[in-house]
Length: 189
Length: 423
Image (cartoon, rainbow over all chains, first blue to last red):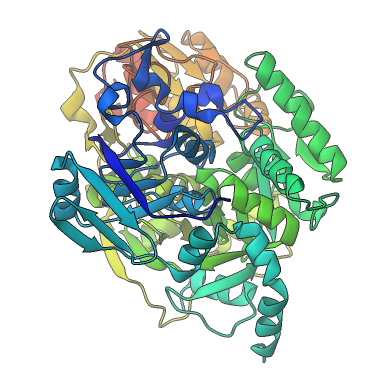
């Protein structure tokens, strides 16, 4: 994976709660076997009507065309465990998703695909939703800066390392397997 | 330690673990289906491109495969997917592949218990979010994404952060007109769709001891809708009998200690429970069924791993016997073994006499894949588990989640109906 660098971008405000993975990538696209090219199907049923972009959907607003940050409400990524949802967000160009909460499997899937999911309190999310300016995400510092807002966010050290170094989670765990087994053995009675 | 902590401790070779500890556990069983299987294959392809050699998996005996989301093949691509999945199981020597049209097959979570694929005390992971279902067998059961499943297939292990446990205690039996589905909808309505995020939901108390294993499976199934990492019920004689009926008597049960800790205990009085319905577009949008008696319906759907087990079909048949459905009604048993028993018991005849259609086991319209999806503005009452926008078809269709009793009663009247109001 590409190492995660500082991200500066305008943020796309998706003002919906409980966005489930079926809305992120509808089931009709799950049958595809490849892992790439899912960006075109992202939020498909909200984004298109009979193949024509819907004017009132936020992703179709030219102001957010090159946005790398997605803002969402509570419980983003709930529902089916399909990893295609993360593949689609990544392929579309989103590298950061900010919400008050994420569904567990979705949250884990993000890190495995180079996406940074950030949990923030509701009042911070509210402020981010109302800013029209660029938001700056610094993973090294664990900070969000925007329009007079400066807050830090939490991330597990394991995930931070994986993203910063662009490591593959599988490769990384395999690399450390011997150490893990030694540790496990030494801790067995 | 509680049961979940004890299972995770045993599987990680530790004498004790606490919530938030990160443990590297040995997995006992892993499942993929016709969506996650090809997803895992895509991850394998990606790894191969980085130079990794993948010509075998950790233990083909511990892996099993289901065809459920897109069978009978919904179209050319899903037909091709089944071919790919079949090649995958052949390539890696996986013998337990439940194939559509070859004897027993069905929804993966239903097979997990019908076929005793997972045993008490085991660690079980699957490439599907409702893997939690199987926790009712006294196992730690959790859903994973494709990358994680690929990792388990290669290594037989996975990291978990030990979850906190929320304990749901049911005091007393549920009344006859109330099912486990009503209880779990009530709980989700109370705690919200992220009320158990990264936690285990454990069910216990006299009401749970009185409950059948199939009912318990309905509870653990929908822990996913409260955001839970897993759901679990401690093994008891009912569970042992359930396994014995399937010819399985050897397993290593795990029970929580007398001083087991829970983050929070919620109590429910069985006798106070009522039929509950979750309105569109979220499983936590719950009200009592009688409050919705003016909602006119287009369809009733009795299917899925949540609501088409044998006792679910018996409940629906109890209502539909001698009646005629007013709206189109579909019954899809959750596995071939259930289909057969329902036939032998005469349940399928009751459904057909009432005018309903009986279809083959499949996830079908529950995930909006095929086999009766909804049109724009259509309204459905369903025994399934999710009602997010577009879940069962058009993004502007609506699904109300309910028990098989409520769904069958509503099929008879064409409106959302409490089973007590059917004479």
